[in-house]
Length: 66
Image 1 (cartoon, one colour):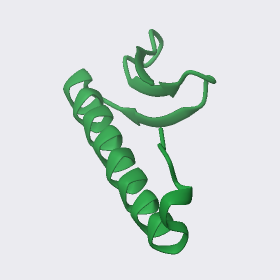
Image 2: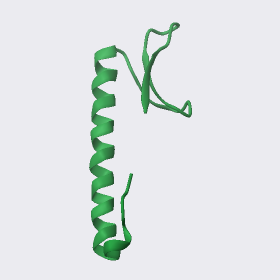
Image 3: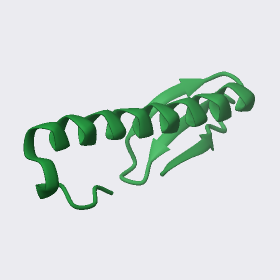
Image 4: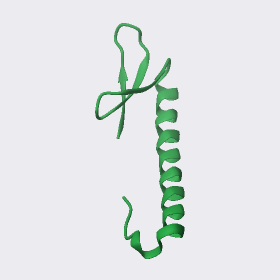
């Protein structure tokens, strides 16, 4: 999960993980929202690619990646 948090001092928007790590800073909420969507899409693509590669190597040993 990635949350968008506005910094009251600068007016910038931080993309923050649930662990409190800042992934990015934007100057607009729209840019922050789009970046969140693109990061989530990239994560899903990376996960699918990793699962495909692992299944090629290990076959049925990969039951259900999450």
